[in-house]
Amino acid sequence: MSRIPLIVALAATLCVLAQSSSPYRIAHTYTLGGEGRWDYVVPDPPNHRFFVARENRVMAVSEDGKLLGEVSGINGAHGTAPVDSIGRGFATSGNDGSIVMFDLKTYKTLGRIPAAEDADAIIYDPASNRVFSFNGDAHSSTVVDPDAGKLITNIPLGGKPEYGASAGDGKVYANLVDNGEVVEIDARNAKVVRRWPTAPCKQPVSMALDTMHRRLFSGCRSGVMAISDYAAGKLVTTVPIGKGVDGAGYDPKFADVFASNADGTLTVIHQDSPNDYRVIQTLTTPEGSRNMGLDQTTHCLFVASARFGPTPPGSRRPPVLPGSFAVLVIEREPAH
Image (cartoon, rainbow, N blue to C red; front, side, top):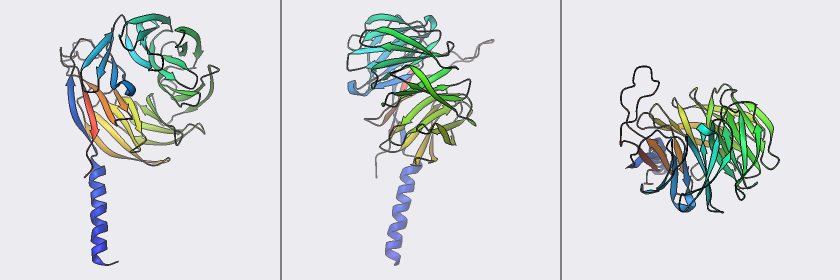
């Protein structure tokens, strides 16, 4: 090879490395304020908004950071599942073991559906047209008919579930945080059909799916992302992430996996192949920013954040400073 092509090749390689070394940045910070801690951040791409659970309500926020409305009357808000095809949303009310059904336009409550103790995460499975809540202390999943707004059944899971995800093919997956397992649910028949361990990952909580390659990503409190082949029902590999993970996402366009962590980091993992992964960036975020949602249409991540005061004696958590709750918008750096 002559010197000129070699120089061109080296320059191209350096350019790629420069782009991949820190591809993401905090582009916006939207201060929303309001009282209370928070939990899951759930994008609703067709309506250019996202939902954030805030203890006694769910906030609906536009992609540009404007509060659109709130779903009230929730006792221990955790997750939200929009079902856009029927204009209804479903939000878990964990302290009273129920699911609140609401109107996606007016945010008014339409009904309350019995679930089970510690109703936490909640998702919609389009293949079965059913809503699934994951009930931590009850070790179960509640199945709801969204059209009728009625309870179908409760599925025993054999462990404490955290987040789950729909594969879009009639299968739903959930992490069992106490057992260190993933369970596969037949959504139409409402039963567990398979399970496998996530070891050496301990306490799997957050979850995302790559449906093209049949890969499942479990963010683990032990400081790793456990990557499973969910078609085979087995662990493939683990990758280090930050501490205190509670959010995960996968962007198929860029083949990037995300973990939002309470230690003030967002871990970005690139998928080189279905079985090969590497950390390409550790983005600094405010401490405690562990909940996130990914909009796969805009490729933006929405990360919940706040400022905290000193931890009072006898308490495990520091108080959220009044008016400090905010959402970070994380975007890819423009291509050069």
